[in-house]
Length: 505
Image 1 (tube, rainbow, N blue to C red):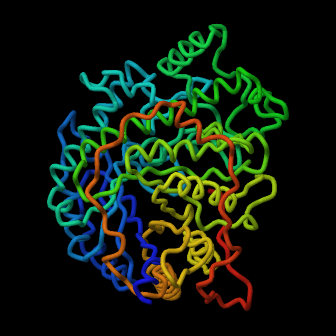
Image 2 (image 1 turned 90 degrees about the vertical axis):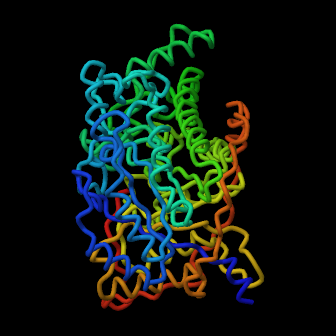
Image 3 (image 1 turned 180 degrees about the vertical axis):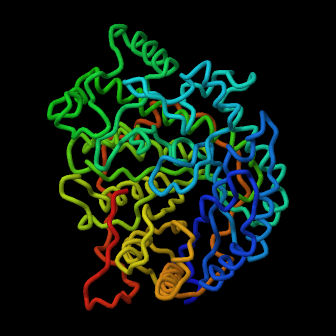
């Protein structure tokens, strides 16, 4: 029976603080982190996740890598007997929800932008975003003779070489490859640093000269040299109906609009495909899983235009699955998909945002499972209440426990955002411990669950037409129960009322 129940076990990871390594690439919090890791181990968690910042490690100059601070952190994680998910963080920390520290991308990379600002993502008004290099320079050798993709590949190769001890020991089990702002595979369409406020639709971000030239060439090849990038899609904080592009029967439904949206979203898929291919070569044979993160853009999900998803690069409509295409691309690299907002309930959202996080989570998880992927999740906002934990538990096993073997669907893992003293104190810690136990199907911590096989080489490149076949027909998501069958009890002192944190993203 215990063996059958073990098939219901969902691993739980906790994300380490953004500034666990300081802005000058030093590890100065040894005693504090050691004590926190001990409490996580006592709570039964399986491991931790950490951002490995490009801006810190290669900050001094091209190929001048300094991994010493991260080695010290990894030693502590290894000592604690925890597993490790390492994020290849090729983006800036700062300018997004929850960013408490500022770690830009390397200065010598930004210096290239002083003479060629088009290396950065650019909106229609010409404002540059320095969080992440535009995917337009993926193959442009502008960085001391290297392309952006080559810089990312070299960084990962140096990581593998320097972290061999932890890879061989089975400490590092997951390499999440950053593919955009906040480490997510998307365009920086809703930057708080440029005045975006929830629930603005965001903007298309493809007006650097490299992406513009790419679009013009694609339009000419399609027999429409006269087509330009959209000029009718509004600004960051507009609502869809204020724009010609997203309003009812707007540009997004025309031949020209569909061509643009396909080009925009396909560029993102190819960007992910290209970098994952490099990651796969680097980590070939290691006992790690490759992963990417997809952003949970739940606002404007309930309107036909899905405007906020479209501007971020997810071509998802009521009759088109913009996530299953990404999932299909991932199958070629044996990669998993990490999705966010697993803790959110529709009832917590404001009506004006036309938000539907529960339906979005169901759609994305179903897309991943249909393509045969391992699917993992995170919460989007720090929450300590039973409502949030029970929502995560429901999403982790949508049809509950199966006492006779694996449930029909379950998450491969869940990462809690994020480690803090607040999480580890008093009632918050007690509730979190219970949550971990329930994710483990009440079996206690078991390090033998879901061992990671050596990474195999990516399959041959998949033509984009083959990937796009996954978009239609858009199938109904798999059924999810309304509530989990293993709930965490609420320990708030307000009668039956549930405490809910305010929620934007």
